[in-house]
Length: 240
Image 1: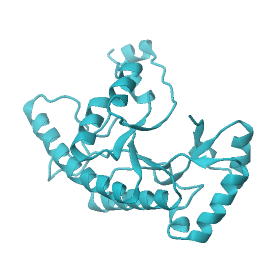
Image 2: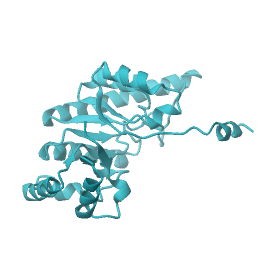
Image 3: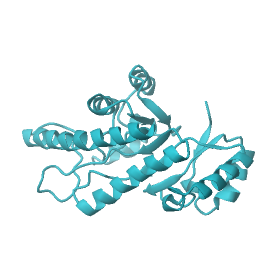
């Protein structure tokens, strides 16, 4: 097992100074952003993609600090109903997968994305209950879109020998283990979890059960070790 750091919190530091700092802390690996919400402060995708010289220089820098890249991060919404935003997110993800292969990185971390509730809607719609029945219809539409999209990404990832690790997250179609397992079953084994327990605690999900459930399916590709505290008094105060 490696102990790694997702580097966006160190965005104010250049990679050349962040790596020695992390090495001194005993960190083994980094997960830099290459697009989407994590940004790309430490690894600008276009500067390394298909550039063997830049990739070699990055490799030398990592080796100097006895560091590896555990995954490349590009968390966005490739299922967004706005075509321009969806296409940009898709490009980020596909290029991140290509770059991961070129850097010999095993995984890309991301979100599943979230479609609209129907073909004429303009905003993503997070549906958490199937009733009234129009919500079930909307969820079926979303799954049709998601499976079609992620089936193509699974093929792209397989072609490049890279795993895609989806973070189960609120306001995304995949936000809990059963949905993650379903998407994997309907697309391919390259699709799995970036297991982040912080988004499961507040749903009342027992973390060890979720690990076993996905682990039995060999569906955990990467892990975020984040915690969550539920402030019950504040949660209850919302109903007053």
